[in-house]
Image 1: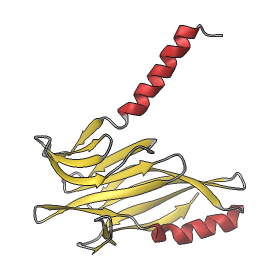
Image 2: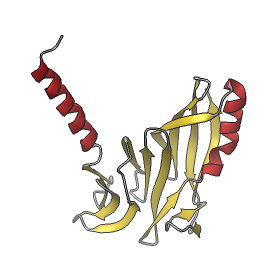
Image 3: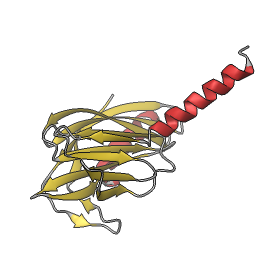
Length: 185
């Protein structure tokens, strides 16, 4: 059994790691912009000035991933909570930054197929970002967990179309990013 002071150090290190997920800037390749993940997630300029609020509240987040396109004109953020995930993105058009969100309806057919394959209903999902396959498309990897206890891995490509899209109540443009080439594993 470990001494109590070592257990306390280990617990503190775990808490620090969890907090550091929300306390960092991920800078664009050209260095002109960054995504700041703290209590909220902001797109900022090189001076640290906010340009756009991407996510207003990160209190429930367990992990946040950020991936910039090599031309620094697009950024994708995966926000994972204990049971779900969301993909938010921002893109620059004529010097103006816009925020967009992936719609749940994009994955509806994939979820239905997985539910048929393994039985049970979807109870949780987690996603990570892969490589950019072009300046306008990035790979997404995910795992779905079902009430039957089965886990199903999947992947797809998230593509940026042209904007602006239809503006939702949260200020996100819908339909600008969408998933294509879904594959269950």
